[in-house]
Image 1 (cartoon, rainbow, N blue to C red):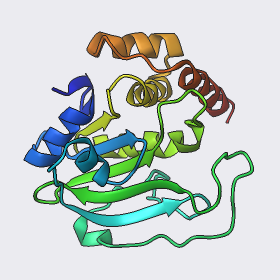
Image 2: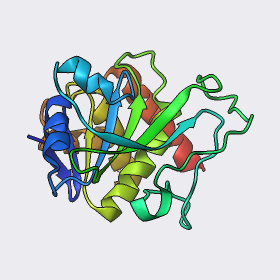
Image 3: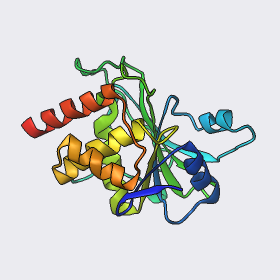
Length: 213
């Protein structure tokens, strides 16, 4: 069962995410999947026979342009506006990013039985050396915009490290909490969350940069 962290914000694992995708629950309208692969086939490989319908909206690669709304946030598309749209890539690549050009930053798709749920998938392994900062801003923007449109479930494989690190960063940014207070607040909703040390250090770095900017 997904754990409610804040109004319209849930955290959970791959099992609960699969249940949401199969049943098209009205309570969850958006999903942020943080797994080692962004492909929906990861669910089928995890559980044999599980088939989840999807319709691609777009894929964004490092150096590619991202559509933005008037407030500067990440666009959360509706079927009437962007169904099947593709981003235009340019040759710019951030020198601070560890990602190489043409490496996937995220994919966005409609998913579930009736293709009503909007799913963002970010390819990130649960390893201390993985660069969470490369993906953090798009994840936080997606969570914020999704909560305006409905409710969002953030999940990784176990619901312990990757999803917890991202939500900790989100609480720090939106509620001006210290990392310690943000993580403790999250643990009040889901006591077993425990981001790996590498992710926690990057969350600290990312918050420090945001405060300077």
